[in-house]
Amino acid sequence: MLIRLNQAQPYVLSLFRFVVGLLFAFHGAAALFGVLGSGQTEAGAWPGWYAALIQLVCGTLVALGLGSRTAAFLASGSMAYAYFSVHQPEALLPLQNGGDSPVMFCWAFLLLVFTGPGALALDRLFGARGTSTPAEGAAPRTEAPAVPV
Image 1: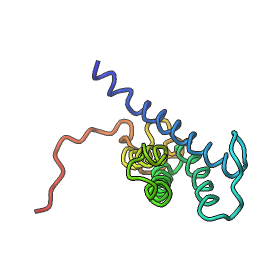
Image 2: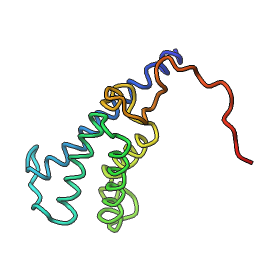
Image 3: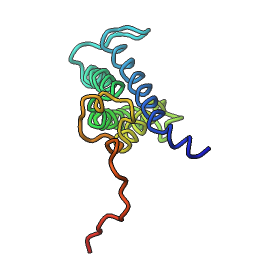
Image 4: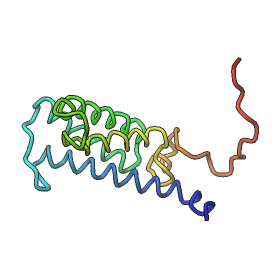
């Protein structure tokens, strides 16, 4: 059973990446264009309009798996900024200050920075470097990496 779960891991990671990126892009689209039941942010207004632009662009890139590690890093940082500048001054804990969403997005994107996009990403289709799994047919590494003394 564990072997089957491990084999599905890159595909489930891709699904996780897609859903998180799509939700993030929806937040950006809602604020930029006033769609999906949200009010439109005034163009150029700091920090809301720029945050919405980051959400739309980075969320779309992450959802597609195109430059996803870089986009996830930027998205994670923007959510950390949002939490500490907007929510945390109101109260210490996210449950008290309404910052649950920024905290969850921040940590989800940080996870994607380190795990990569998974098996189903446009980066893999275009042969971009930095994919999370070794190339097919590559021999597995058997020796331990050298550790400098």
